[in-house]
Image: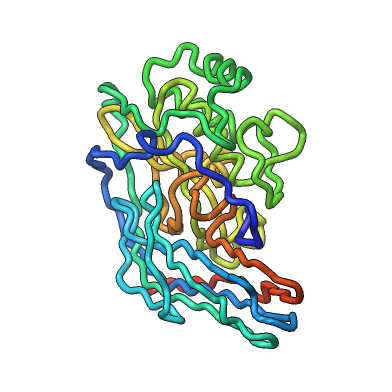
Length: 321
């Protein structure tokens, strides 16, 4: 999964506006437990050139309240000379102007949160009602209008009586057929039909694309995954992670993580069950503010002799007792 980088080309978001209107649907999952975390994000940028940049900006996506999944208890941002903004998905950003970055100097960015994450379960016994008309369109990396995606969605939907059964079939297909490869690429749903492997972004994108191909609303999330040390050693996921929720009629938005659920042993754990080790940073596959990156975006005009190097970019997550 990509993190922020030097970008000089602004990539415009596709299928925005009405597609990403805020849903008025009320979620009704059961809160089983609540887990608190301290989350610390650190970035540093070194000016290794002989002059200040002509222009330098940094946009950092902020962890925010996302009901019913999480609530931010506190947030501290340093330095404090930033502008808050919101994008078409409702994501929030701190924007910094570092144009006065002197040669030989390092600029550090730090943000610390305390956040509570809910463990959620869903009652899928009633899965009949009207569907929403949002989060159903094809877009970059979610190619739900692609003929291969459409054909597969129809094949997997055969004999399924409800939307819940359809999406479960899509979820199971991703677990059974994709080969997990941590590729740090943004290949998207269509690429899973090739031999390039897939990481969490492809797992989530494919299930979303298959759902949208059948008219089922589905949303993409990028965020952080807290894993105990023993789990990290299995290589099951990285700290930066992607997953989704889909809209089940009569139930609401239902979370699932096809990457963590790809093994049969964990298949049930991550379908219609939001485990409280997921911390949402952004909603949406292609937030325009991030310009094709994830979590943060950095842009500068170098001039003749300015060289800005990303020296450090890391997260630290500590569970609260």
